[in-house]
Amino acid sequence: MKVLTVGGGAREHSIAAALKHGGAKIYACMKNKNPGIARLSEEFALVSETEIDAIVRYAKSRAVELAFVGPEAPLEAGLADALATSGISVAGPTKSAARIETSKRFMRELMERHSVPGRVRFLASDSMDEIKDWLDLNGCDVVVKPSGLTGGKGAKVYGEHLSSSDDVMGYCRDIIEKKLGGTGIAVLEERLQGEEFTLQGLCDGRRVIPTPAVQDHKRAYEGDSGPNTGGMGSYSDSDHLLPFLSKEHYDSALDIMRKTKEAMRAEGIDYRGILYGQFMLTREGPKVVEFNARFGDPEAMNVLSIIESSFLEMTEGMATGSLPGKCGFGQRATVCKYVVPEGYGTKPLSGEKIEVDEDAIKKSGAVLYYAAVNETDDGIFTTTSRSVGIVGLGGSIEEAEGQCERAISNVRGKVFVRHDIGKSDLIRKRIEHMCAIRGETNG
Ligand code: AMP
Ligand code: GLY
Image (tube, rainbow, N blue to C red):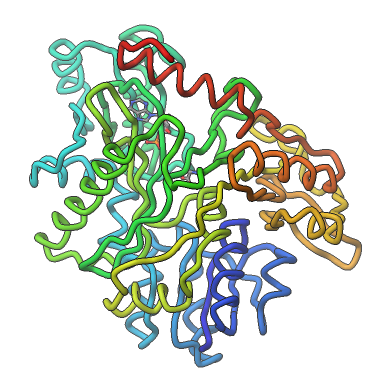
């Protein structure tokens, strides 16, 4: 079957690899030449991922039957709607359904209207008077974010980026006046305390089929310091839970996702594609930090590296409303670390050549996914985004981390890596933090 993939990052490399493994013939649209995707494809086109008309024309001209959209920007621009109108089945929500990610106001109000569990106190407003009244009532221990898309970099947290009610009001004013996130609506949320985790589900409008839980690392530098990034790396455990996450809490998060999908269905929204839940495990259980309308990056790499069911069948199932009851994943732990250009997070060094010893990485047993690099006749060059994702696998997180580290030394250039991801020291800190939140002593 001919399948269109959209996007040129490591997430999309892992998607294309999983589809190809299931027997798909890949036709890729991406803005940079990702060497991994290029090699897996029958053919590819270099095109901006929001050029809807050009992508649809390409897909039709190649008689593509099925499409998988990787990033959020084309979903917000209506790519799934346009492909469907052209008779191509799509695993990716319509523009209206993608509001679960593209409008934080829509997401919070939807959960409220349907009393979905895992809610937080919030206000979505473009009125400074209303914001002031709400802060007077609720206090300023909040997180402030624009309602619309900001590439994961729009949230400011009281106690970290904001230290007074003047700061909170100042950032709200910036969001409103500069129309940050596109609409100029500020969302204020109670600040949640706990450990974050990701749960991604495959949706066909009716079912939500879960994948293993994953924990991402947003901060650029070791010890969770430095600026927020798109994600520096992530891990998952062989039992599909996390060292601080019980089955009961995993099931509560899945229940929240299923009820959110039901809420959309009740409002006439047929959600087909990946539903990504970002949760904070708090003292009272999981609460929703955000939803995304797509796989996480890096989290896609963790789950697609161990998928045992045919991802082509799953993609067809999502697109056509006919998912099977279950998707199988291997009982393996995974640790993914991103190799990023020097300066990533502040001033990334783009256009720098990197050397990747693919044979050595293959021999190590780890899996290599190219990210936002560009391949030319002269080699592989960095862009301003992440360069290469390496996934180590093992019976335990420790084993997977060791394999990832042995492989990652085979990527060379002006780059850096958060080596602490998946290491026992950092994992112990996560467990201790969760125990402190629950008011327990560890061990
Ligand atoms: P978002 O833009 O909603 O994805 O938020 C980015 C990051 O800000 C999240 O991954 C959290 O670390 C943090 N954050 C967002 N909302 C909250 C919240 N209500 N409470 C605590 N932290 C949050
Ligand atoms: N890893 C976070 C995201 O994909 O939004």
